Image: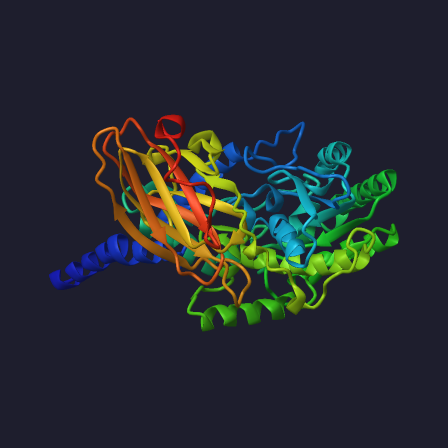
Length: 508
């Protein structure tokens, strides 16, 4: 029996150690692969998202303690209906959801009074979404209904997706010892053999064969009945409505093949639809090239993923959906969108408004306790275990702005506050969205006496509007008091005055 020389075994062991503890974690932090840490982070985001979204089975309208419907008289309201694409599986920033980007896009086009609300549940089919949608229509009384559709919404609960592969079951046994390697095997090696697994357990090279099976036989017969019920719903409420077909995989013919039977039947029953798959693959190829030219290297279709471990739509894909839909809505329904702005050069710059509003945070308010106070925001900082850590590779609190804004200064203060670091992301001027470029503003240190106020200030010279603010490296002299106040300076106007508030009234 041949034995490997000691030098070969040593080299192999050294390679495995480098992979597990250096190379794979580094790629993980950079977001260039789906590793064990991102998988764990994505699970945490999902757990926190269930605390953020206050929707229930009886009232599935998307709302949180910081964001929700608030229609004013005369303002057009759009209701978006959907599944996890609407609910928000994988989103550390609710403003990255495509229906939130739609509202931003309408504001950018000059329709500042437009409001977009949403109702969605993870994994829900088109048929099961009708009842919660009807309740939402009764409650919100929208002016326009947008019904989103992706291929797996056709499932009338007659079929199931493939079982976990043998490789996945094996890696489950060893993930505690070598989590990085196991994650790499599951997400990289398994992808190479994905074509061997299908709905029919290997009779086709199409790993999503099950989606096409939904469009035939008994399942499609039931789906036709569901679409008739949807048409009846639109007729009953007698308001503009459109079914929007959302493409997912950027493969030639993939979405068209799955959408054609749906479009044919919707046409037959006179239901308006908008197919966003037309030109989608060409858009993706061009967008990926733009990312590469900007130094953002992502493999495959990862620029379309909300995070490296979750394939729900990123802000990039959300913008594609939203720009196309905004054009359709403003042109099709001029009653609600008068004097539609089509020329992008005439778009409104919403970033110049001095009003800063934080409408989302991670961890959510149920843990973070973020309150608007004294012209700024007060935060009760949770323990590090409750905070996210990627892509900063350290625990942080994330504050998300309703609209990206120009910020010239940030001040935070808190009793016993010793150190803090601020990292922001901005709206890229070329892409007109946040593409994940992080700007580390640095770590600062205060020297407060016990029970005294620590005040830290950062001056910003960024030309682009800020989209998110992350607070990291937070240390307090006394671990029992972890309250902060944060203030923003915009165009030489500060949201509140951090130097005149009484600590006894606002921080203690």
